[in-house]
Length: 259
Length: 323
Image 1 (cartoon, rainbow over the protein chains, first blue to last red):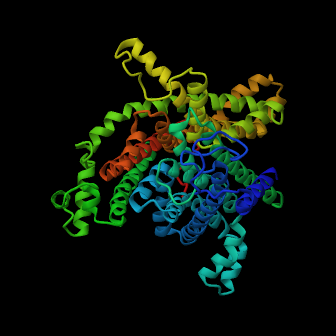
Image 2: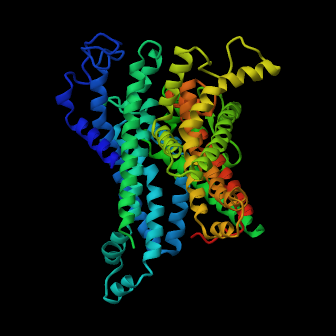
Image 3: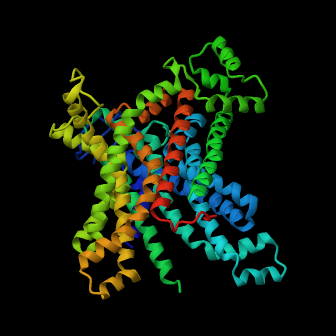
């Protein structure tokens, strides 16, 4: 519940960005590296841009990115997991290997490698992150499908002449979707951190204000402009905690309705 | 048991093959000419053609794939044009630094995480429990490199207490105990950050929930009913079972720990493999990046395998039929 409040707050900030800041995140012109003051709430960065504005606009970027990546992961993961669990046999074997593979390798390495090869573009990054995190969804869906497909209602549907796809989408998935939803919220959090890490390492999209990028730029100025480094990180933490709490909340709520 | 080992070993092989093939595919998908990519941004046309010939990039794809497989499996991870040395050599050179960092953080994180997890589980719902759960959640949600920056701010800039970059002091001791001491002081901040941000929260949460679960299990109630001393109940019955999930996690977290190490190494300029990867990115040294990826992936796969086997040995109830 607290999470929901936090998240809504963050969302509100993202949407209302132009209203609460007086500067755009790209406006150069302010004196560089000022400490927090009446003019610039959190000070300015090394190029004279208002830090507060960048953090606020960064909210839009982070939320958009994270939900996008999580959505990709949700769709791809659910689809492949469902196929794997439903059809079993060779399909399952092969797909399971793929899931395992992705789960085992260090995520960041994969993301970095793919980003470096495919370009520093925010859409590429979202795609790459989505590709890296989908297997956990797939695993869950697969387990759900496996356990559900033996149930009576599935057999009934098949007796009624329903084709495979119909059974899968109309009957099995809606019942098994719940753990995936919870997992997806956690993935949003993970996506935020991954994006921040990417930007921090310099592989993010330079056209969008990103918190990770701000942290990267703050490094050389650590001793003279501490606000530059501290606040974007707090923003990241805030968002991730918010998302995690929401996920926990959903989890508890959904579990309460289970027999 | 032997059969299990054999099967697991066999399973590893396709995974490793897949990693290599995946790498191969990746560089082919990348926009641009692979030879150009591998020769680097500053290569002359002549060098590009040389690279093309050397790696057989002018041959049909299936042949290229086999050639790549062959070279990787025989230990050739490519040649880095920036370092002018085989990739594998550079990796092996930087490996000890990363190992020191990751292993220290892992061990400390596991021990502390488990201890705190047990502590919290023994008094669920209490202030201490709540405080611990909240703190670890926040620590985990915050990016590890931010934590590192904060640590540098506090310990380096403000209080000037601990060194904040690289593994050794410039012009510092070069051998013997003073060297070890020097490295250790440099190790404190990076390992501490890595441990706090990634490893401790994970193990804390797992230990806590598995202890809680076990404490409510039937056999514990039985033991209590028998009139056993509470502490004895705990130690002899609950603890052993509660510890098992943590063991599995050790293997699983190795992959993420390495990722965390990469970020930590960047912040603290620690000369390990993570930093190497970063340099590879900056310099567009694709052979290096691919080599590191294969190397780390294979290591993690092997480590996971070992953890699996240990887990099986500890708990014979584990069945092979997870599929």
